[in-house]
Image (tube, rainbow, N blue to C red; front, side, top):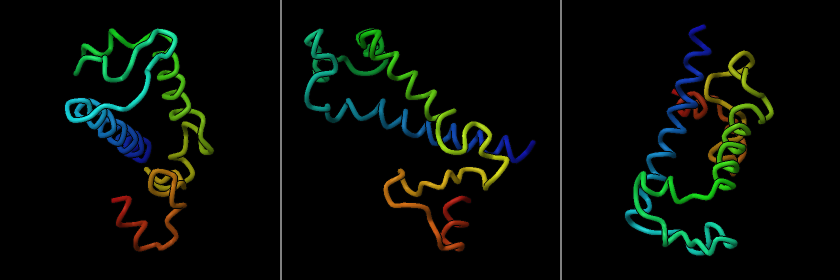
Length: 112
């Protein structure tokens, strides 16, 4: 049970860090282009903070929830990844771009 709780804490902590960056970033810079080309809504037109949530089209919210479901259930190990490996180790490496960490000492340092 402790291993599952630790895995959940690591996963939700990582998501909370990404959400914090996503909340703070619009105060400094905006993504170029359109959030919704059909509605002629640019990223620059969105207000800052929680006010932006009411401006996102419903199709955008569907995409956000589908991505969240993919993150939670859809990867190789699924929702019960904590049963087979170390908590927090999904086998993808840093942001999934640099491959898994093979050095045991570096892996231990990264997961603690």
